[in-house]
Image (cartoon, rainbow, N blue to C red; front, side, top):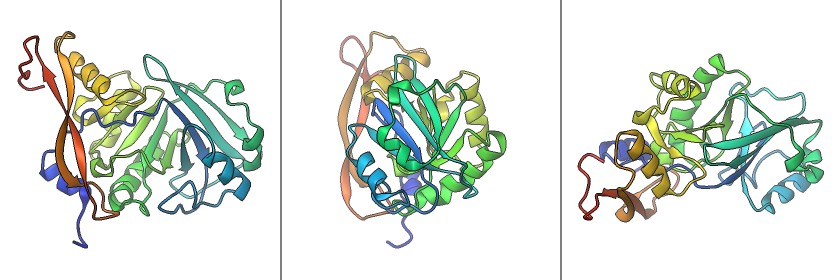
Length: 259
């Protein structure tokens, strides 16, 4: 199926996106201009010592680049740690990438401006590049300093997808007609439910529970992860993998209609 597009197939199947945000509680974001390979952390233009250092860290590392291919001066680095309400973000600009080797992440200054991380690594999945890059270009016009292309948020089939910091809200099924309005809503402190996959840094069950309550659901309702249908999840390979879906159940274990 050379013309297969995972995002189109997922949308056609009405696959739920709620509860699919990244669960990693700690992120390191490192500017790395230029092309990325399928395994972006191993295949990039950073110095060998920096690549080895990043690969050995016990946290999720995402690479960043500007939509227009611009770079410098310096190397932007952000460290994000999940809190109860989103992420605490710290950041700096290093003189050179090698300065990462001795960088004290806890000592970085707070970074309070919004960050929009749009998944665009076409070497990993075509949908991310075809859908994500135009979104990154659009958002760059509104937030030139805060918009970055990034390597892999997970959930290619929900392209266009992005992670918003510091809120941690992860959006999916965006396009150039919806992305700006959705991000403006996030910037105002709102939750644009139609495009929200969940709040990153939390287990999927907690992501679903938050959105259920925000939609007027009973906080006492139970959220349960159940096996979903196996499906091809990426344009990058033809493997069929199992999925997870979430059910909201009332006090007697009955499914809650419409949740």
